[in-house]
Length: 83
Image (cartoon, rainbow, N blue to C red; front, top):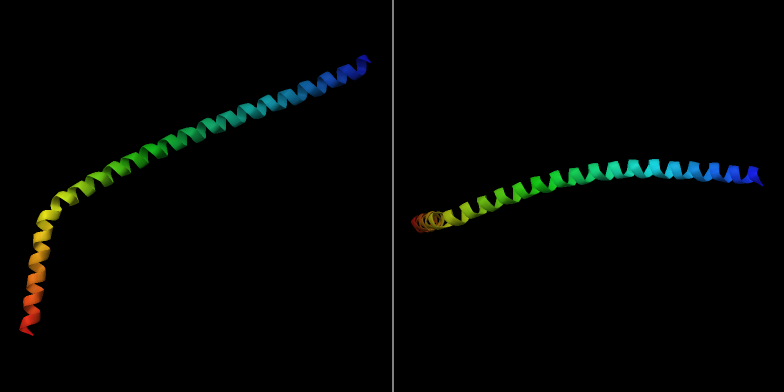
């Protein structure tokens, strides 16, 4: 009976060792993945902030641009009437 118990202890300890090594490798990979995701999120936040600033600038400039659009439409209408 001792021989069978020794074999079972060796098998269980080997499986446990493999499980622990695999778990450590997976945890390291997950940590790297989380780090990469964090960097990507930071970059995305910067892009959103930049886009927000650009949209705000265009919103503020829409008043003067609207005046130029109206003037352009008036010139086009005048040119149409000349033809």
